[in-house]
Amino acid sequence: MLTKIREKSQGALAWVILTLICVPFALWGINNYLDGGGEASVASVGDKDFYQRDVNKAYEQYSQNLQGMNIDEATLKAQALQKLIKDEVLLQYVHAEGLVVSDNEARDFIKSLPYFQVDGKFSEKQYKALLGSQRISSTEFVSRIKNALTMEQFQHSVMDSSFATQFDIESYFKIQNQQRDVDYVVVPVTPLNEQVSAEEMTAYYQQHQDLFQTPEQVSVEYVELSIDDLAKKVVVTDEKLKAYYGEQKEQYTLPERRKISHILIAINDKVNEKQALEKALKAKEELVSKDFSVVAAEVSDDKLTAKKGGDLGLFNLGTMEKAFEDAASSLKQGEVSNPVRSAFGYHLIKVTELVPGGLKSFDSAKSEVTAAYKKAQAENAFYEAGEKLTESSYEHPDSLQTVADGLSLVVQKSSLFTKDKGEGVAADEKIRNAAFSEEVLQGNNSAPIEQTGERLVVLRLLEHKTAAKKDIAEVKNEIAAELLKVKAQRLAIEKAKKIQVSLESGASIQAVANENKVELKSEKALVRGKNKLPEPLSDAIFKAAKPNGDKPSIFATVLPSGEQVVVSLSKVTPGVMSEDDKKQIELAKKNIANALGQTEFNQVLSSLQSEADVEVNKKPQAQ
Image (cartoon, rainbow, N blue to C red; front, side, top):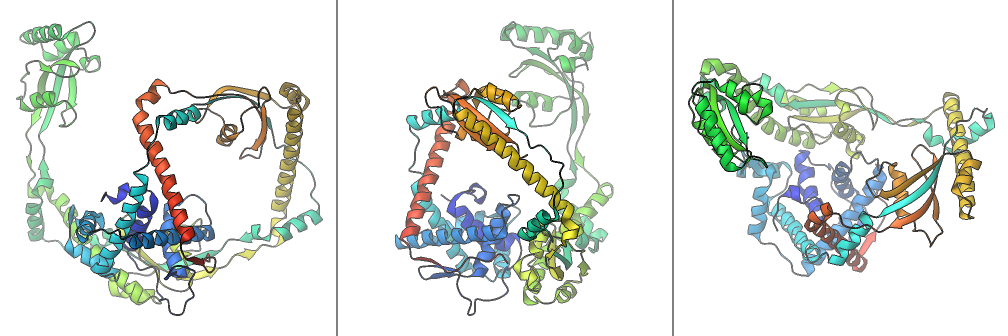
């Protein structure tokens, strides 16, 4: 039940734990500067109230998980609120049912989390420091984890009871491997070369003013804490370096360098094991009078290395079979092994170069030791400074200079940038998201933003330019082009509808294609996900209704280019399991059962929500 967090990529538990842990710790900060006060709640579940700050906090994690999907902030905040509600409904239900997780289970889980580990082991100091930086007591944190694990227990009790029957599996492959025959025509969007009247442009401009605006922009001032900068300030002495060298000797120990060649006598359909061994022994006898490279070129079945005298290059443990590695590791330079059996046949192995390993001297390794020592010291300083940075940015939300002075950092400034694009520090999407967050736009310092694990940035609003309407004179060419594009698309849609009506009335698709001067294309035995058609067209074909007897199914769809496609689906053949499918049947059974279990859990959760006392007071704002 207590699996690692990276394995919990779906369902209620994953989202709850990631919200509890990843938001506060991965971002190194407290995301809200103001308490609830007299703030009105956004929603409630029973006696539990949610405020806009709760939605904002959840939204931060939610938006990170869905980066790149082009979902607007208002929609994401609404989805985040719904997820908060569902999780609270589930939590109240499992508590009412008396489900519990023991303190020991929770502690074991917490100890497994990488946030609290140093060198792969749980660190009490790290644990207390991170909780302290978030103003969370150990008792409160353990309670949160217990809640999340209890919710997981219930989720698994529902999902793990699902199973896939033979009928489910056969039905899946009937659909997955289904074949469809289609004929289709593509109606292009033909560019228009017409004059657009001033009246048309004015009307379009007035109806779509939101499209003709300069984007919202901000510039920020920021401080940056980095391991590289801290490393430059580390003072080193030979005494300190020698002590570090002594502690880290394994890092400066050179492995033995062993170069090998081989002669392979392969076991195959023509040569059995006995014959191969005899041939290998004969080859070894020839080495008494011939050079290894000559015999390798004459008899080795590894033709690639035979051309190079059997040379395999440097020998690395873990790349060959154990018997081969054992033999190669035990030979002296120039010595040839007895025949060694592997999955390929028999090998004669020779060590052609041998350089013993050993510890680098301090003088020869001094530059490496210096760099490693500085980085190690900087990493420790970075962790401590990161805590101070978090505390200072929280305690002095209205002054970035105070934060900078406390850590001897320099306040830097960015140029203006938008939500979608920026330069310098604003090239990072994390920075842009923080700059346009509610807290920063209201005049507070941001929480520290982690970059690549070796840099923390705190930023503060410097200048904010709201979106502004462009004058019609600036955008008249853009409007004219858009109007002509819309008109051309409308003409393509009308032509496609005409073709569809003709086909539905029983006309031949070839005749209709000729009449409308469009190319007729045909595809036979199309398989879902295994064809070269554009994805929107393929999806539409496999979502379309089956033909009714001899009457084809006629439908239209649109491509991203705006081109219209009219399709005649003439035949649907149920899929069958291939031999490859049969080899994957256990995996298919597991995946189908998981899908059924997830569906069943979602239905249970929806049912619990419909019976719970849930009230949504207002739509969360996209601030």
